[in-house]
View 1: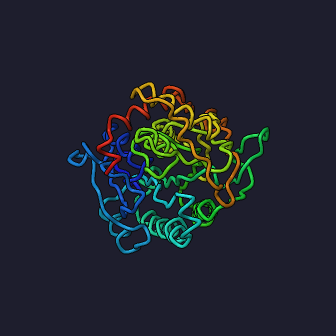
View 2 (view 1 turned 90 degrees about the vertical axis):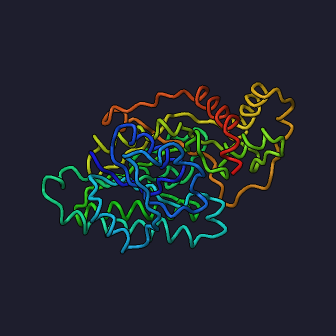
View 3 (view 1 turned 90 degrees about the horizontal axis):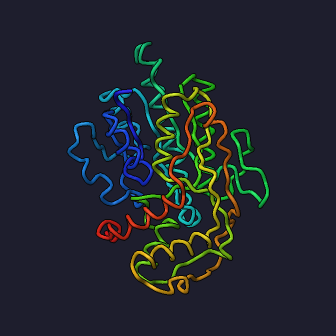
Length: 334
């Protein structure tokens, strides 16, 4: 794997993946249309790297996608480009249908046209890795077993429904056209460079600024958290070792309630910045429509088949994440 394309490479997970690949000296071309989800300064320090290229392209633009594939001739594609904010999907679902479904279809169609033309040697190397979410499975009750790769899809928001649709398209292109695809579904990510609309950045930034910290409903929603660097390492390993046509759930088996996490972040910010009584800023607000109660993924398959295991303990990772936001206010304030 010497040359890869990363769609959505200016986003949170994408930009961390790009940095990981460049360190491996893999020539990486980023395709991103730079919407609100793009992380400001995500390419700081790597723009001039000889292994990095960037193209501002919408994945629904067939002509431009075909052109990039023909010119760059990638060994593999990491497909991360997606609209991913649940609240936005409730307000404006059409954007999610366009990017997540139509965009993925277009990318698959262009990739298939490209794959048919390449040499047999390169066909043996090429893979299309589609990065999805645990939300396609719906939600769990407390005490239910974690979702695994055979769990039924039951998406509950326009966002998760659009991602479920894209997963099905990827599977279909493998089964019908033999395009060498792999799907990964991952739990909630956290770490540096995350979109400031997401839960953990909102809590951190509001605690730093001593503003109200909004928590949906009773705050007892449970999420399964993984550090973004563990996730991108998992994506790389799945690309190398994963079996074509298979799905792998990537998780660190770290379930936390939203209210626990908000309280923990307040404690860390208080200790790091000498602030007091930040927990009093927590403000319970009206719950989101169709808000899933609990997500959790079983990671046995990826551990046994890929030999990947999460390395970053949550207590260490969340502390370092808070420290990053405190030390890089110039980045997230922009």
